[in-house]
Length: 250
Ligand SMILES: C[S@@+](CC[C@H](N)C(=O)[O-])C[C@H]1O[C@@H](n2cnc3c(N)ncnc32)[C@H](O)[C@@H]1O
Image (cartoon, rainbow, N blue to C red; front, side, top):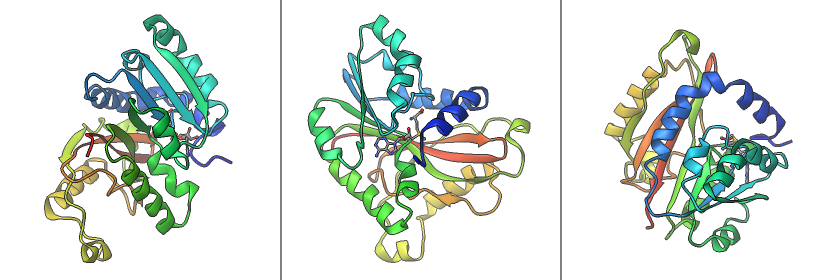
């Protein structure tokens, strides 16, 4: 079974379009900040592109999607194919494990802007050993050196006190990715002070209740990256904290 996609994901995404609309608007704001002058997009973990607009995709000359889910390609075409053919955008939907074969996939799309679309925060579900999952995320970051890339992913998720339907949407927050923590700070699970303050503020706006799951993506973006924090009420009583950023070639 695919722990981060497949039929359950499509069903949930289809049914939740109303609930997720404010999050999709935040995502659209962030997507619009993509680096200019990129005509090709490589979309990893695309599924059916439930949370992005056809209009944004139509700005590219060529879009290649990758997903391990056999339903992803057909459903992506169903959702976006018509607009992309109207804009003259070439669409290629590949089924495959683009994370395990990242080197080859990047090589095959050397000019493309790379976007990890809500997939890197799921690595811990595919690799339940926390050390192995963290190691995989760090090795993905290293492989991206020299590339223009972006990611939107779960940073944390957990229960909320007040049902989402009874609260206003938490507005998007911005922060700058702090320096990598020292080994001793990491051992003590410490963040630097500004990051701690920003995180406490966003966490309280999300109305977090109890312990939240850490999706192990905290060190993915290089220090100094502008990060957008987006609230994603997954269910009425359970929220995901998304982080999104575009990264310049390093
Ligand atoms: C949470 S869903 C995100 C869906 C999509 N971005 C959207 O908005 O509809 C994560 C997706 O990543 C896919 N995925 C997981 N591991 C993958 C891998 N190694 N290579 C490619 N896709 C993968 C899953 O099949 C799933 O469709």
